[in-house]
Image 1 (cartoon, rainbow, N blue to C red):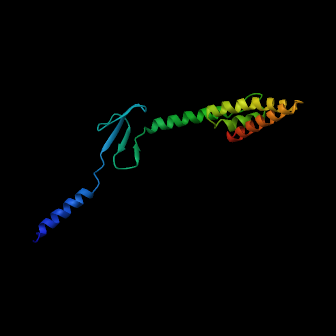
Image 2 (spheres, helix red, strand yellow):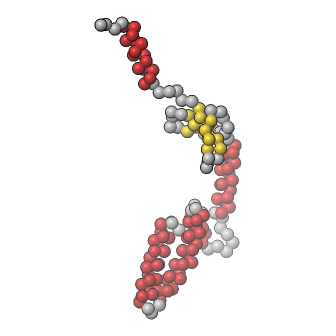
Length: 148
């Protein structure tokens, strides 16, 4: 039983076409971040291509520049020395300007807590001194971790 050469070519073409990846089609992300929906029609500036790992985002350059300029103005305003501010206070504020708001708040709380813990180490009771040393060590460790 012999197979015709035309069938060999046809079989090879079928196998080859089945192994090729499907062409990427545009998929559009719509809706909010909490409940996104995906459609074939454009509804926003974000385009996801199926089959490719790269994300193509179409941004308005004017908005990007305006946002960057506003962020730079806020940073410049926050990094000017205030009236009556010592160089040490200014340096602390400049360093903490890069921190997230929660971390800045925690640094401020540590600034208040650490002198209280140091003052409680003067207590004549050794148990209280040991407790204050432990608390002060933990506060200093956290202070260092936050880069206060």
